Length: 94
Image (tube, rainbow, N blue to C red; front, side, top):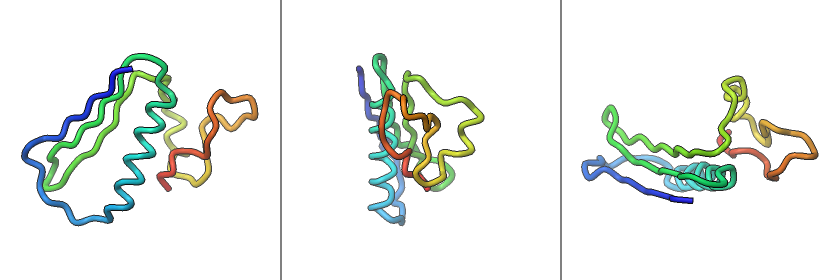
């Protein structure tokens, strides 16, 4: 598994809740690693519209478009079955 980090040189200072951003980044990266058996995970920080855009992309199994509506609900996973391969309580983005 190849993991790459890219942070643009021209990132502006941002006023935000550092603990929340750290938690979001940790959740996104750990889920990308959990659901990517081979290939890559890429983390990027880029300037966007006076702020910073944080993105995590991977070559893992992905999510169906209809599942996107539930990822911001607490303790919710796309596969809630008892036979699912990976445990956890969801992305933690609520």
